[in-house]
Image (tube, one colour):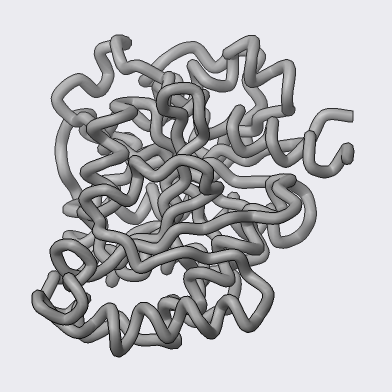
Length: 312
């Protein structure tokens, strides 16, 4: 029996509904799972044909396609929450999130700093329990990048990089890799400063925070190397995941090496949640030309690896 996967269709004014519909018809997706779209059927029909697609109805107002509006932000999070709760109840094996528009969410007066913390809150966990891991293929190898800090200012992020937070990220990455079928994960850890601080010449965060966290993780049985300069970290082959300290240390590499092919996996929560690492593309919404490859990639990577792991 194929696993059921919930697809939260994202901002109803953006390309989320269109790429969700296209992904739900993709032969590769249908071979692996039974996709169920969370959204309003009438709204989804504005973006493409809905016949033959399973839809879990979440009522929405008719959107103004290609625009930013508070109701669009509320609608995107409503579908995501419904899908996550469905997975928590055991009805779905995983959740895939289509693009949202943060400007629309903030216009609705909702405090939101990305899907990871949102998933954690819906699951009843502290927001910091969730970690974002970007996943993509590059030169024949699987690259996974987990982030210690994410959607916050660099000034604030520096204060958030603590030994405890780094250790939590390492443990979350290790646990996710095991769930994905990797028996003995190897993780490489990047530094905060240029050249990982150059033995204190460019900063002491590596000496005082990152290295002690690595040592603690090793004592806990994890295989971890570092700290390594962020500019050469991803080039180091032979690792199952890389842990970076700041948002751009991971996102720049991912978007440069795998444009439109990155799956953003939320780890550290009981729900397997993956989303695409691109925006709502309001400028082409409703025109039928949105590329669903990133959505297909997110579904097939997560569900395919999960099924193989469960089979072994």
